[in-house]
Length: 143
Image 1: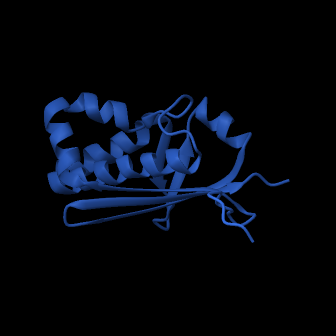
Image 2 (image 1 turned 120 degrees about the vertical axis):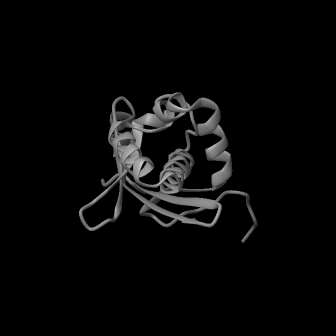
């Protein structure tokens, strides 16, 4: 069988993406741009959660902001757009189910674009020391 550069994913997986970021880079952006940075990156429900965490513990706030930044980068890679329309930072939110499981929540017009092409989206977040990481996987649209 000849070797190719084409990657073949299992039938149910349409795309994967990952992102790893130093939390101090997010802290620097926040210190430089403040609320403008938060408004650009986070969706409405993410902003509420960020403000609550930031008020209780500024370090937890930065970790939250960094993991959400990484989630948006990973998701944009999984869907093959990067940060191009209709993908924008605030149109993709990572919220939590009552169990704590992270969930992808999309806003228009990204939501309609996504639903016409893909099935379920999965996201996993983690942070450690000065690093935050996200892994995203999107399923093929059911036939």
